[in-house]
Image: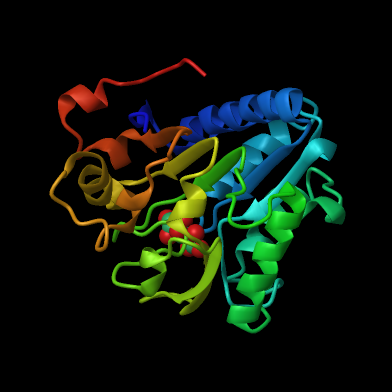
Length: 257
Ligand code: 6PG
């Protein structure tokens, strides 16, 4: 497992710009080497600035017709609900980039959670042509970080954290929309690249715990479960989110792709 690469940017807008460059670069590499770019989008609010950068500055950079969009988690609501991660991505990225619906694979939050999870696993396996027990390998999985250390919809103390076979499971959140659907840690850890996007001082404590507190228990800080088996792990943060890190870590501002 490779060490996490830290990319610390001055503020949220610069973080979004750098992350957009990275997404486009990973996409180019994936299309060149594998003929397609399969990406899983993150939920929450942080990705909105990234989506705006991609839509505004990368519309012609990448052959978006070769990109398949998945979601690393979803709230169990209708796709037009204000809490829907699909709705946020659709409004800020998929519609602006004119992505064909055939290239958009959303989690059906409006359906029975257990059935929706199974259905999504079948969809993923079909799109990757990867039958069980092999693991589909996303080109890029984008993740956020909650101030409690959750990521995707992997929350402390939930059975989802112990899943070692499933790709996608129903779960519950302690706050916000309760019923969720989420990628499991083993699926995330099979990705070629995993990128966290974290912005804001309210995340500084969770960032320090995940990246520097070796004693912290992954079952209480689920983002610590994200340790790609052979892929890259990159953390895009603004200075406010990185403020809790030791000085050595904060000096890491990598510009290599
Ligand atoms: C969700 C997300 C969740 C999110 C973090 C950070 O469905 O809410 O997948 O994991 O990424 O909670 O959210 P913000 O970007 O809004 O801080």
